[in-house]
Amino acid sequence: MGQGTEENGNPAILFPSNIKPNLKPEVKPVIPLIPLVPALPSKVENIDEEGNIRHLEKNFTVMMEAKVNVFIPLEIISDISVEATVFGDETVQVPFEIELNREPEKKDFYKILYSEKQLDIDDDGRLDTFIYSPEFANSKVITDNYVEVQGVNISKEGSYQKKVYVTVEAGI
Image (cartoon, rainbow, N blue to C red; front, side, top):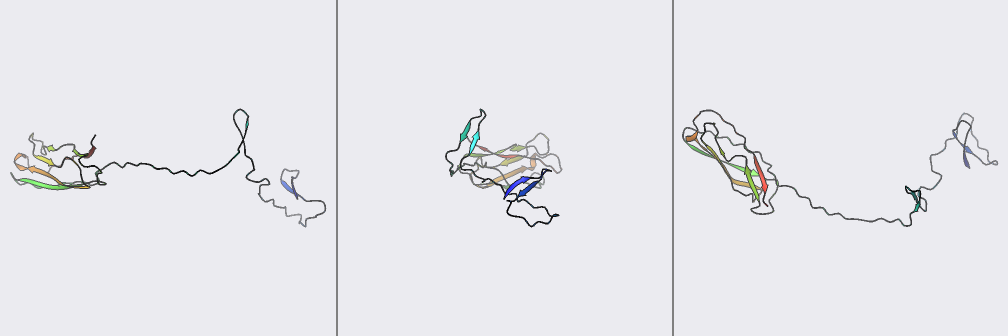
C-alpha cells in the first residue's frame, strides 16, 4: 500500500495492481494521520548557525535536587485598636497585645518601633498620651504593652483619634 496525491492536491491511497479495493464511488477513503517515519530517529541531527551538522552521540537523564533557603520577614499580623474614656484628671492605662506572624528565632534582635510613643491627643501643646512597650520582640505574642492617658493634661473635652504605626526592625 502506498500514498500519493490526486490531481486536485488531495491525498489518495494507491493500491498494488493485484488488489482491488471494494469502495463505493461516493465514499472517499480516509487516510489516518499517522506519521510514516518513526518519531524518534536513531541519531538526532542539529544544524548550528554556521551550517555545521552536529550529531547527538549520547542521551541520558540527570536527576537534580535543589535546596532553597526561604526567609519570611517578621511581621505584625494583629490590628490594634485602643479605646478609653477619661473623666477629669484621672489616669487610665489600657493594655494591648501585639501578635507576630511567627516566633522570633533570635532573642533581643527584633525591635518594636512606633511612629509616635508620646502623643498630644487633643492638640493643645501638652503631651497627654504615652505608649509603653518592651523594646524587643522575643515571643510571638507580646503582652506587656499599654497606653497611658493622663486626663490632667487634656484641656479640651471631646472624642479624639490618632493613628500610630507599629513596625518591626531587625537588628544589625
